[in-house]
Length: 387
Image 1 (cartoon, rainbow, N blue to C red):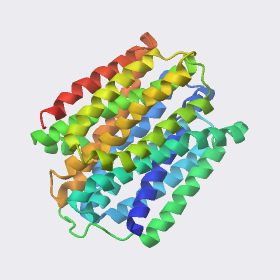
Image 2: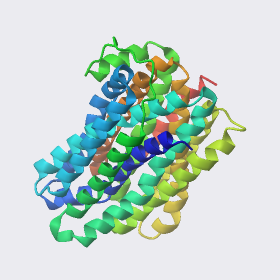
Image 3: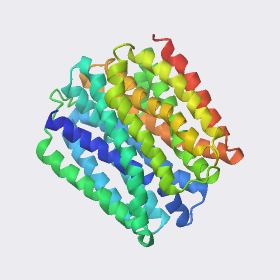
Image 4: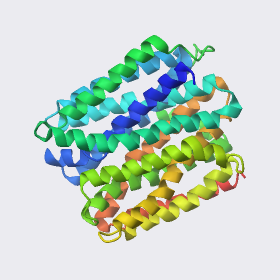
């Protein structure tokens, strides 16, 4: 494995580790500072909202100036955002730190474009799966680390959490500066760059195949985000789990995602094409999402891990498959832009779905999981037509 790939892997891993660290502790910390549940959802969603506005821009910018400078700037922004979070003592600073982190973490599409630059088309799905392992590792290690660091220094809020994550980002910045060379040698210096993500989305939506994959990706991320946010509330309120236990639940999802992305995907690709993988796994994941509504204090430990097995299968296999299919639809000069649009739509789903799910949860705790089930089944038709 090349040093360039290792640096990109580290970049994605730290982005997702920071996100994973925040998942089990940010809601409670915001409430501790005086936020209600809706405002807590806004604080959680603003990270993804900034991803939405900035991901396609960063992807296009990397097509024009190269991947390396964009990655260096965004890694620095991540380091500064976690420093700010560590010293935050009010809701405004917490919100501001998540805004900055949302911009910095929008570099995922640039990292994916870098991988596309340095790999052959027939190797991309496997390489994207390895990058997906960084997502899984972030969810394995992040929640337990976040809960432990918060517990160590409860009286100082997020200080240890912020300092630890910021230090990792600075290490990543130094390694990228010295060891990451430029991968995109055919830069489009005349490329028009816009801050408006809708413009880039409209461009690619003109192509039916690309449009179907982009819409499917949006729906999949929306369903997974509903699970990600509302399961935390459900586990605590209806299943009586503590933050540390919830952290280990997410850790299990991360472990299984690593397995599917790093090992399972390679085996499955021998018998199924990417489109077939998406259809089969989407059906299994939809049933598991619906099953979340049946969890209670008596069956949570036994049933949760069965459901999480299939949910993590979706998380592990679907994203790299869709990313690979999209990257095969355009030239290398457009790869960064298209993957930027893909990540932008995913970020919009993460910003909207938790708020909608939270609203439905207030009506009845089962409604968000029913919605996720319906969304996943509906999305199968978008890909099934391409078989």
